[in-house]
Image (tube, rainbow, N blue to C red; front, side, top):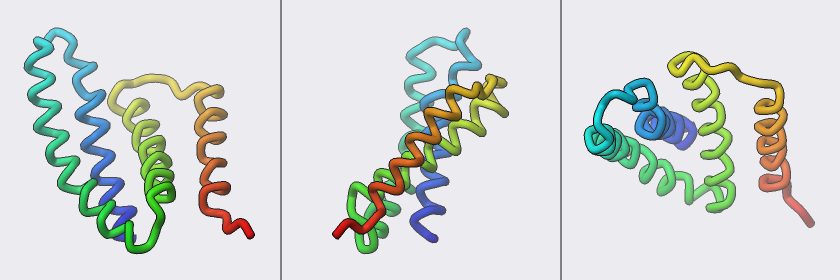
Length: 110
């Protein structure tokens, strides 16, 4: 559960760093780059421990898959709430297909 919590916190910061500036298009690009890097530093402070802790329990492919599912979830909430964008049916289908990949990554194949 610690890995999931750390990855979730990490992804909140990552999403803010990558997309939060889109509501401030009037601010100079160099300023949003610097601010985004500062936010990304905080993201790394959660991401690196999450991967270190998670590596004792999961393969790197499994860790990356977990992280991508969390990223999609955080991004959906962020785009709806903060960016005020619509969540279209085709986005949901695409996300569902990516989440279906979780089955193949975590399934024990003989």
